[in-house]
Image 1 (tube, rainbow, N blue to C red):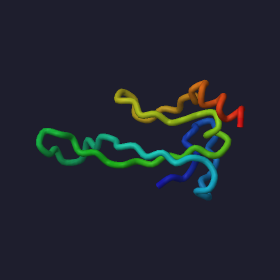
Image 2 (cartoon, rainbow, N blue to C red):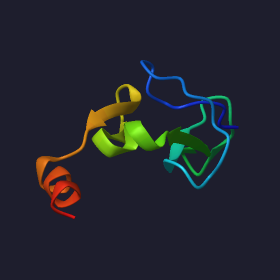
Image 3 (spheres, rainbow, N blue to C red):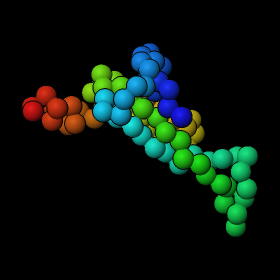
Image 4 (cartoon, rainbow, N blue to C red):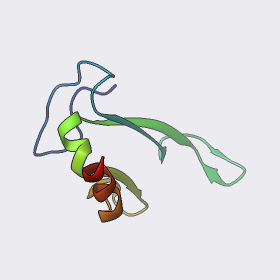
Length: 82
């Protein structure tokens, strides 16, 4: 369950879907069953509040899980141009 903004420097409480951006990632489930040699996966949800979603996105990394990353410059320019 999503409780707050995924940005560790923000932690704004999640109250409404209409603000911000919701992300869903399929994450390895080490405690889950291994089927046909493949590790089970589970869906995890993360949310960035409206303010944080203007400047950041969440990306999945094999090594460290989910990371907060700056939005690419071409996306930022599109936001400023509108």
